[in-house]
Image (cartoon, rainbow, N blue to C red; front, side, top):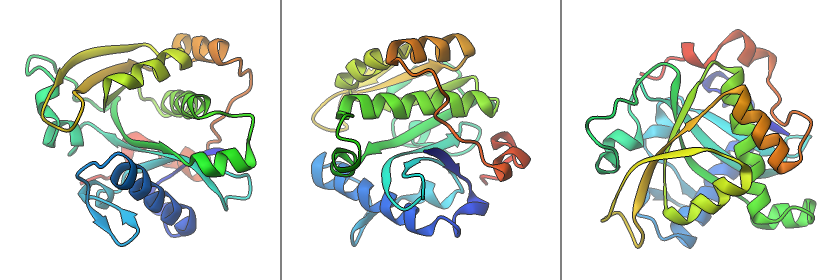
Amino acid sequence: MFITIQAHEYQHHGDILNQMFRLRKRVFSDHLNWDVQVTGDREEDIYDDLNPVYLIWCSNDGKQLYGAMRLMPTTGPTLLFDTFHATCPSSVNIIGAGIWEGTRMCVDEDAIAKDHPQIDTGRAFSLLLLALCECALAHGVHTMVSNYEPQLKRIYRRAGVEVDELGRAEGYGKHPVCCGVFEVSQRVLDRMRTTLKVNVPLYRQSRTSERIPFLELDVA
């Protein structure tokens, strides 16, 4: 299932969040060799202290993590503006209540291969992106912004995602880093579902997230 975990739910989902931080360390530090903050077997940074929303793909019993992404409103601190500002032209304004940043997208390839052998890595990322579109649309988000390396564009194409690249910059690692915006709309969602041949909703909205919309979260 695909769910969101908000700040008031962190304690209830402590085990799955611990799995997420450990997965992030394996992916971004061990595999990609990014310069990220690692403590023991976990990767966490200052943005995890700002009450972000986590989009989580996990087993139906909530015990096994398959993938995750961090979501934050652009009206507060973001990686884009604090770290990757060179990737976005200064003339472009992508700050707004309905514009959210997605970062730290990752999947646990071993767990997926064990429990869902019919899903390859590319489709796993595609399903996570589809759930993201459903989630954002359900919570009044009309635009997602993210930094990514150019090779990820093939994943976006496979998922039927429309991305508008605003700019890119060197100097962050082995590859350039791009800044892209993604439209969130029913039209895009329909296209993604058709492309991926998924005709049922993936994202499961909890009762508590219905009472506390993303746009009202305190991220200060």
